[in-house]
Length: 134
Image (tube, rainbow, N blue to C red; front, side, top):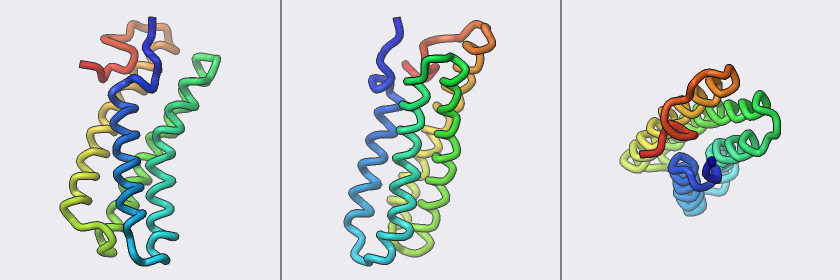
């Protein structure tokens, strides 16, 4: 039996990072920065988790691969973190931590996508549902 998607470590990491970014952006004093860079950054990181949940909720196995959109949102998030650092909206230490978290999530997401594709193709899937559980 599969675990609920929201119980997976990958999903929990993404949620925690999204909340961390939300709180950081919320504290930015400059309204223009919050409404431009901050909004894009928040939407992109929230898009990672929401794409995963949407894909998991699909009925057809092939439709479940729609969560590969999450990888695009993840790459978009990295872009906006780099912009926040360059524009001095986020300090470089915090930005480096966020980028490190995004890299870890990206690796786990690639494993998840690979395993889902193997399921669609009918091949064996090593390990657990996500390939990321320890």
